[in-house]
Length: 250
Ligand SMILES: [Zn+2]
Image (cartoon, rainbow, N blue to C red; front, side, top):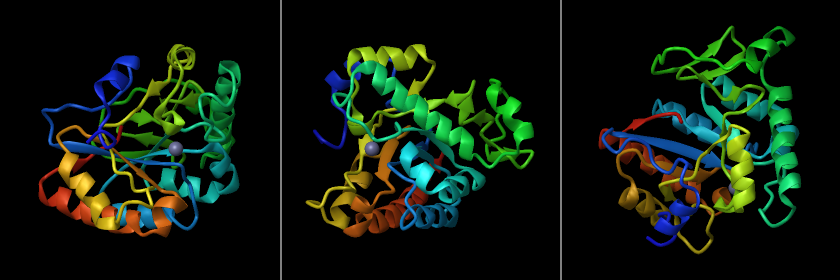
């Protein structure tokens, strides 16, 4: 409980961050951090397809640079994505200006590697508002539009999640001023932990999921190598679908 769910203090430190969506709605918001990783991310995409689920991927810019084809696969299959910095930096690794540089660098890698033609660049730089269609769509076969929202708005990612779930106050403010929507979570599955067995990770999900939960998995080798992700995600999708939850995009 202390680890899986965010504590109240953390919520007070980042009051404008997104922790949970509408508690009245029977919907959950799956997120995957730290990809794209060739051994893991395509499997996650297939699994999500099996259940007709969409998710939001908080990607590391350097992984997108190394695996642009997997990045494009995520976008083309109708999922959303957000910025998770270029090098998965900790807030204390660099001063705040360098932190923002790292965030910006990741944005540039995302934009450079989108499945778009040069003609669509202008389109990506505009704020896009379209009525929600309830499903993802790729405009002109190019731009990453999901639920009428683009993952890229005004030349930067719309969504940001800080590595390790922490930013200092100045970084938090800078990100806000720059227009990023900061996304935290309602539940961390701890799929990355080698101290947890796959059934324990699953039970974290089933125990703490509630209406509007933003749920954090990791499409990383840490989650994959012990089998936590494969077991917990497969079963969670099945159980949560059975319980009537919709899987929505942020
Ligand atoms: Zn991370």
